[in-house]
Length: 304
Image (tube, rainbow, N blue to C red; front, side, top):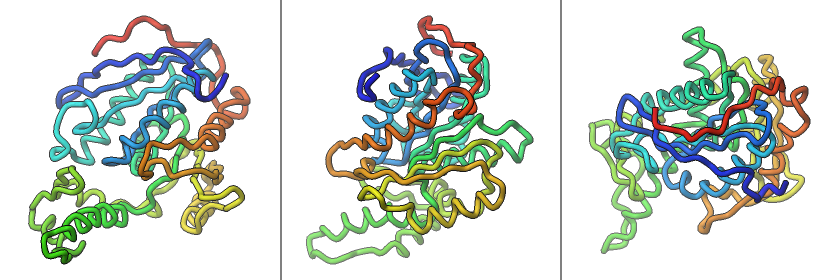
């Protein structure tokens, strides 16, 4: 089946949460269900730019017997709340909610698939679960993980700087240091149409992937590079090596294509779709997924 062909009709619904509802899109497995993944989306406008890629990959995985749940985090997409009220802790709770729903739906443990800051959120969730003595995700698919929340926040704040430079006098009115000072003083900032709360900024500043121990589950790391044959970035290669030395069951590879989450127009990266699908294509032995045939049913989904 083509990666670009819908495997089955996705089923939209709203999932009840502690604060309102979360919009979800469920892609049921075609045939016998071999496992499930919860998709954790990226931050801000990257989420919108990535929706097509996420949908294409979810359909491809569903065609291979991997059910996928896409969830809009609190204050994003079609879910309840405003972005100004988004908090890292609420997003961690949303990941937990998605995992609980999908695991109950399928009757088996599920994994996580995260993109960019969503990958960092997924890994932070796995760390929190491990600290509680809870089971790790069944496996994790990581697309271009953000390494440093602090560096990512700096890049995001530069969007505000670029906007400020378009002032009437053409001068740069603020730098990232000044913007961070405003956040420390408790002021929310409007950045590229998103109102960033100081609490969310503080949480991002504290996140460093190098300080997170790899979770005890199979990890699949995929980076997108500009040209075929190029290796992982030096930063990614360093972290992958460190995690492998810590005993992580981790494979990593680079694929060539556009960095679709940041392109001007909506773009796709076929090589990333193909590489991700290949991870699950060789049956239960390679994918590490139970192939007992305990598939999900296909009755209509109701808000729960």
